[in-house]
Image 1 (spheres, helix red, strand yellow):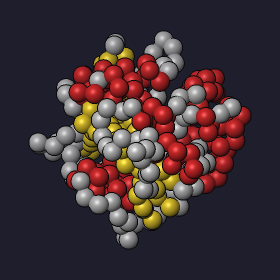
Image 2: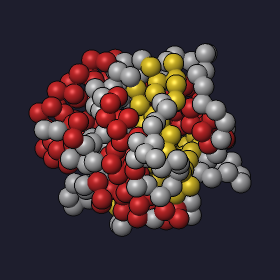
Image 3: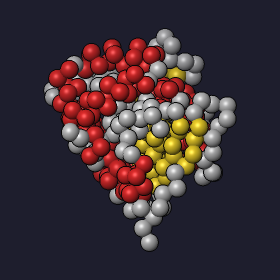
Image 4: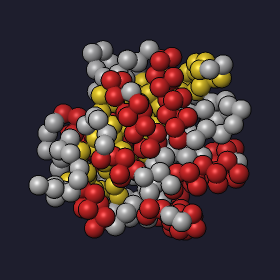
Length: 276
């Protein structure tokens, strides 16, 4: 595929009788693969900037979930639990027994569901701008947040997102967005059975205010880490790929997460108070 980058190829496979398109980097032996999961109404193409930065350490895969991008639609638009099931089916079809799952926006609830359903298949989860929950309710508030984020993102993001949104369709977008706003992402994170890293942007209008994050953090187990990238909005995978990849790699390697001075944005780990 033109523009996908050296060391990458675009392929497809059949899952439940429907074609799934995906992008895959060159194989890195003896490393747990990294699978990137996109947000609602959009394909995985906007995740590529971060995936490219991580391709040196592991095989990276960026699928389009059923009904998105170049993947075929199912008979009905899939909700979050069904998308999680579809993601497990994709892992099966790819022969991946275990993977690191990196979600963005709606991709975060999807990977959280996979971690809860099949923890043995998930090495770790990275939740970039996890959407959903009371801060995104009622729906009119979430729509306003979406509009606010639109003007905070890079204009280049619109060139990637708008064609995908138009293809997905306004009715499907509205229905799935409504479901996403009702998904309790922060609370679901508390019970995740695998190590988890949440990365949030300081300019993300979808995120809960700091006091709410601290409140949830008091209940968080020790295997959950939260990092903040100053200056980033919702689509961090696209706008701040170098800084995000640096944060992910530091966490995967078990080293202290500090800012990369050569990349846009400033990262700091939020010190979450824990319940005694």
